[in-house]
Amino acid sequence: MTVAVVFAYHNVGVQCLSVLLAHKVTVALVVTHTDNPAETIWFASVAKLAASHHVPAITPDDPNTPDMIERIRALQPDFLFSFYYRNMLTPALLDLPKRGALNMHGSLLPRYRGRVPVNWAVINGERETGATLHYMTARPDAGDIVAQQAVPILPDETAADVFIKVTAAAAGALDRVLPALVNGTAPRVPQILSRGSYFHGRKPADGLIDWRLPARRVHNLVRGVAPPYPGAFTVINGTTLRILRTRLDGAASHLLPQPQLYVQGGHCYAACGDGKVLQIIEMELAGTPISPADWQARFGNQPINLETAS
Image (cartoon, rainbow, N blue to C red; front, side):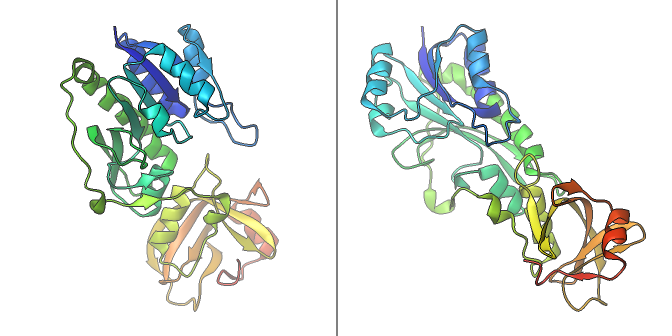
C-alpha cells in the first residue's frame, strides 16, 4: 500500500488528485484552501472531490505549524504531493515522507519557475509550455525532474485556454510516471537552473497597457491576463477601459502620429507604438461591455490618443 498526503487546489489539484485515486494510492489526508470570497472562483473544488471519495480534507491557514507537522508525521506517508497548492512548504514538512515530496508545476522547468507561469508564458509570447512533476526542495521549483509534458501555445489563445491544456498535461504526466514512482524506478533529472528563469506573482494593476509597446506585445498582455483573470486595461477620460480580447490586424497605421483608439468600418482598433494595429474584439468601459457603435455614440468619430490614457 502506498500512502500519500496531498496539498492541492485549483483544477490541477482536482485532476492530479483524481489520478492518485484512480491508481489506488491511499490518500490519507488532503490539505487545501478555503476559497477567497474576493476572488473569482472559476475552477473546480479539491475539497468536494476529497469529500466524494471520503478522504479527510482540511484548510489550515498555515500548513507549516508544529501541530500540522506532527499530524502528517503520524500518518507515515510514503509521498507528499503538492498540486497547485499556494503556500510554500518548509523543509520540516518536505522531510517527512519516506519516499519524497513532489510538486506539479505549470511550465517546462527550469523555465518559468515561480508564480503564475502560464500567464507569464503567454505574456512573453512563448509558443510552448507544459507541466513538470519534480521533487521539492527548500528552493522553489528547483528539484529534480521526474516527468514533463509539453503543450503548444497558439497565437490567439488566452492564458485560460492554455491553462486547460496544461491541466490535462499535468494529469497525463502524473498518470504515466506514477507506476514507476511507486515501484522506485522513476527518473530523477537534475535541473540546470541557469537555463531557466524565475517569475514573481502578478497583481491586477500589472494589467495596465503601455500603448507605446509594439502591437504584438500589447496583444500578448491582453490574452495573458484575459478573464477569468483581471484583464488588461487603460484609462479613457478618467474611466477604466478593460481590453478583454484583441486580434493582430496585420495592417500598419501610417497616418496616426501616436497610439490612438478609433472606430472604422464598424470595428474598433488601436494603433500601437510600432505603428501596427490591433483590432479590439471585446472591451468594457466602467465594467459595462461597449460595442464599436456604442463607442461612436459616446465619443464620436475622432481618434482618442492613448499615450496619455494612463
